[in-house]
Length: 323
Image 1 (cartoon, one colour):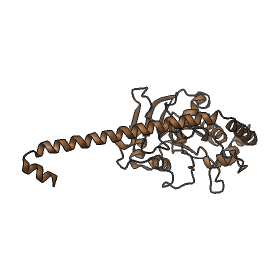
Image 2 (image 1 turned 90 degrees about the vertical axis):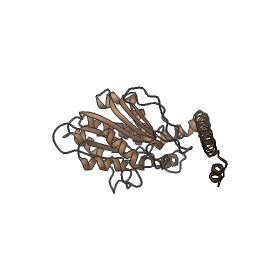
Image 3 (image 1 turned 60 degrees about the vertical axis):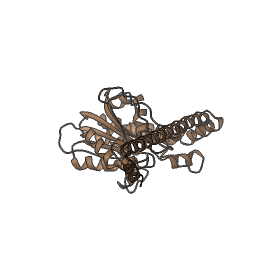
Image 4 (image 1 turned 180 degrees about the vertical axis):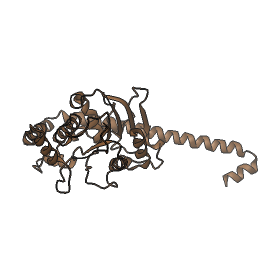
């Protein structure tokens, strides 16, 4: 109707230009308000995090949880006291995910051929496990595609379960197997044993290079590993990719990872700001080959934190990056 009137009165082009300007202004204003709201929310989250982390109650709960998890954590750090390759292999079997061991944390794949291969380490998100379907854990699609291609050695690890961790913290459970400190030690052991050919990996070849891919908490583990990367791998660098990176552990209140791992020689970061409660961060580009992608640029469906690893566009980007 407005188009017909404007054309009849002879100022159609001006009218259309005015509408377009108003529309763009409203859109820009909405985006600015959304960005500001997100920044305010994230600042508030950081404030709550630091207030809680310094509180007497949280310090007491953490100390009490550490005492109750002491034996399980010590077993993780010592590989159940393993000394020989056979004992280390038994330790690996005890934490390998199977239908009969649903608290297991990893699965692995050895590519065909005798020559050294790239090792791709996949670190899953909070609550995810190797026993889920691809629809429940999108990072499993990446693992299964790589396994099918059979070009790289693979190691996929779960990183813990916030529900079980909090139940243990508040004394609603005595099971500390999925406590983040415990799981982190297992992941570190598995990477070290794979790279140094111990236990289940004694008949493998040392990896010729390493890629580390992390989603959500998995990207938090990817970052945390910088403290011991050289020791456990014998290498200084790896290529890294993260999907909506979140700091590891319940005590970080879902805060975003804001910096690439120190050991990263090249970094791919895919993040989203479509959800206030959980969202990654753009990060600062530190090397020429680093690539940072707002997921809305490659997926118009605007996935949130819980669906970003299911996005076919994201999966393709990560697979292309690895291959």
